[in-house]
Image 1 (cartoon, rainbow, N blue to C red):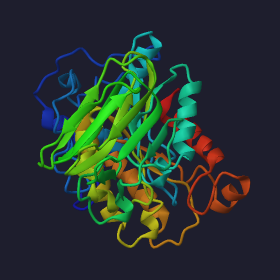
Image 2: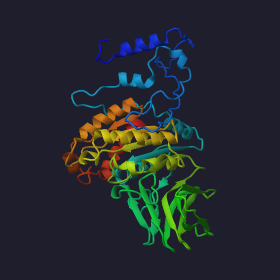
Image 3: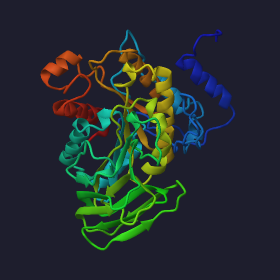
Image 4: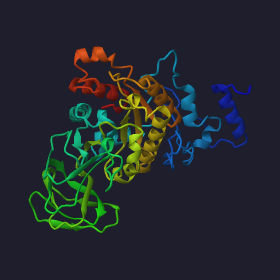
Amino acid sequence: MAKGNPPNADQLIAEDAADRAGAGRAGAGDATGLTGAPTRAPAAPRAPAAGAAGRALPAGSGPAPAGAEAHAGAVPEPARRRIFAPAIAAGRVPLATDGRTLYRWRGQLGLIASGQVAQAGFGMTGDSWTEAPAIPSAYWRMFANSVYGQNSLGFIKSTADLLVGGYTRSSSDGWNTVHASRTPSFPYGAGPDGNNVWTDRDGETLTYGKLPCTEFRFLYFEHGGTWRYRIDGGAWTEVVCPDTGNFNTILVSGLSDTAHTIDMDTAGNTGVVSMSGFIATRRSAPGIVLNKFGNGGITGNGMEKYYAQIGPQMQYTPLDLVQIILGTNDYRNPYSPVPVFLDAVAKLCAQLRSVNPDIGIVLTTPAKTNGIAVTPLSEYRDAAYQFALENDIEYLNLYDQMGEWAQAYEQGLMRNDLHLGRAGGFVAGSILNRSFLGI
């Protein structure tokens, strides 16, 4: 091979076979499906990326796939995927990858379809496209209309705005709201969505209503505060926190399978009560869980403020597939150029894989918007596609599937210069479903 020339597929396959020569074969060949096409060996769990300091997550760090010795001449799957995936040509990026890494999501749907009590956990994280109601509400309705049905809302944000799913939230005025896109740091901890509420006052209240769940979990940080909770007007339970700064949770289980009201107050508080979110699930019922982790206004660079909280807190809710939508704020911002954006996505993916190494990830470039570009959004699109191939995740290209902004706005798909409206949310949902969800 000439120095400096990238290897082609035949060269990589031949070199890999030569490296493995003499290793022998443990099986009698590839199994075939009904169509006669070779079926893929079961995928090994993907090891969580440690650190993720660069753009690429560690490849091949997990155990070898079961039966891998039976494919001695095969290129490892991530490399094979890069070789055979459609290339960017003449400014055109494929509309979606092939979905092969979403086996856990498909497996959970299979359990539900077979009549088992199982949940398929869907999550969405990124900027306002995953926090504002247009897209998440469309997904929630899509889940309801599917044969799998809705289960629960999963992660419940601590802050008051942009609620989805019909639940209610009310609070007294003494809570401080911290939002990642509007603060340089979090004095008392952050939620996995980059939001937090805290108070150092006595007697403040916080109530969530109309929340269907059989389990309810409080996510909070210990800063010497005292608070209480009760379910459906029952007896109060007091929580006295040490002043450690540590993250902690409380699970209330065994609730009836109906909508509940959860009250909190800070009676007797002399420290800081800090809440990073809540989780409401129906573990005794099947269906799809919607977890909304979005943070309006955030960039990949901005997620650096709270990404370390993502894995430790997301682990408590069902999660089998997470869609990342980022780029609308990045392309208009000098502080999140493409290399910084990719570093942040790598760290985010590492956090998600710390929740479960087999979690499915769909990195998504948003549709065209009407902002003033510092860096063209198309450059983020191109880089995101290549990142997905290099790191064994999926990619969805809304940029090339929803037309020009002016046309989409005139048609009523765009609510304003930067955000989809209700109809646009349904279009985005149909594209995601067609490409990956299969519901």
